[in-house]
Length: 212
Image (cartoon, rainbow, N blue to C red; front, side, top):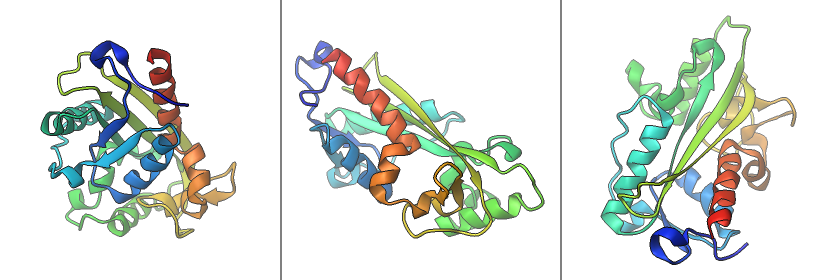
């Protein structure tokens, strides 16, 4: 796959994109997935772009805000994702607040604290169904009136005991019955082929291919 991109806005394919995130785990996943499509990904931190505010209650609004912020400060096309864990028994929580789940309850902002709060919130709950949800927003420039939006869901269930040493976030507690493994037990290549981000990114790349 080569020469992916939108020619309607700039006349040239997208070859270099800034990632509107400083999350090292996300950078590794997206760099691997986009690199295979011939697209160079640059983390916004490498260009001294500060993190954008994420004030909205929906994934899509936050993703668009972050993408436009990075594009405006760099002059480059920008890709942002807003993703999180949605647990049915918790009415979709932690949702857009997944990265700050423990912090909202007075705890620290860390994966360990977030996981501890999640497990505690589900004590005694029989329904452990959950899914990771990802929205990707790609803007060719800051004021792009036609951003590309893609989404993906990765279904699983929450387990109390952590499993595995790979991944990040809630991965050690996110169990995938179809694979008989937690997300943290999967090798990166396996996760990159099946995760919510992989599903959303395949959708996004298909859109780019159609418009190339």
